[in-house]
Length: 247
Length: 247
Image 1 (spheres, rainbow over the protein chains, first blue to last red):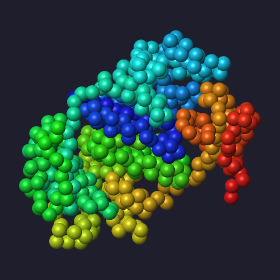
Image 2: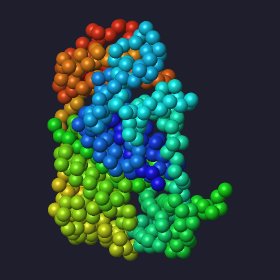
Image 3: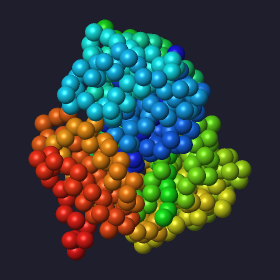
Image 4: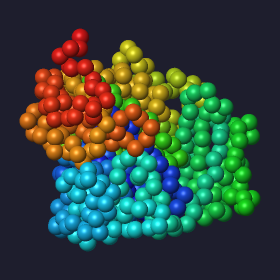
């Protein structure tokens, strides 16, 4: 099993000026790859805050993904801050600098080339799918904040993170959470599963969604058997098909 | 100026099963109240992760808002975890327990009453707007994850956080970020403002949005004068009206 963390960098997310799309998207994407996402954090364009957070999550998980702060303007400080945080110099990558210079041509400004200044030791991952390389500094993948480019860069390297499947079944119930709490506790204790309970207070045709998850498909099905045995049949609105029945 | 942090608690946000609405909403709401949101974090339903994060942000900001983990089921561990994190016992609030017992009547289960077990010293804020009290333990406001209730509980106490206005003007430009980076740096250096630069690569009628913000309205207008003086007129798609012109 592999673990990951996402660090979103940008004042605009904390001031509510721009709503995050990248963490929500990557959380789902990592899930399909079987990666266990352990935390998401949003920090301002502030070197101390970025340093503190990136160092901390880097110690705790296998892969860190940052979003934002890699353009040419004054608030784009992710690359230089990570270099400082890990006490390595910022060095200009000649190949990337040439790519940038070619792309901008006559319009090239010195600030554009800041995007080629990377922490020493940074891997620049080049793939056929993506003309611009992806920065990887010690399993910190430094991605841009623009959602379209964030996704394209991640997809270019996604397969390197694949590590299995997390199986999930949902039960949609007409029941009060408090009245089933003991049953949920029992099912989780008896089988190697994680059970989640999410109440609704709206117009949906159910009042609580129960999720049963595990890397072991049989454990999911066995825990669902325990739940169904303990629930009143009238409380069950619908249940996902057993994992064992799926192709 | 007051500072704040938001801690979202829940495996469902990290697995991508449920997309956050609360942090995005509260970020905008805190902004209108003039509160400086310094970080958002998402942690799993895990006592060590919750303890670590809540303790850390509690030291760093004036107000902490948590979301999630306050229902009756096994994965609702926020209240007890915060008690442990701050080394105080969990104590049953008699008034809240009576309210819960009255609400559930014959359907009352022992698990329902877990919602009345609060960290010792926790303030239970009762208002006319909200029949259920809001938990406040040492400026950690412990809110539920269900968006409708999260919002209602925050609104019941919102006015206690009001501390001024952050003024904002947007400039929508047809310009490349790299070519204006030096100008942005200059405007920020000359005036007491924060400048943000957000490129677009889609069908919008502009290529970059520049935001100029400050608690001092004159500083915003003065910085915008610097920017407009340095930009080619053809690059300016539109600009928000001066702060000084607003009613």
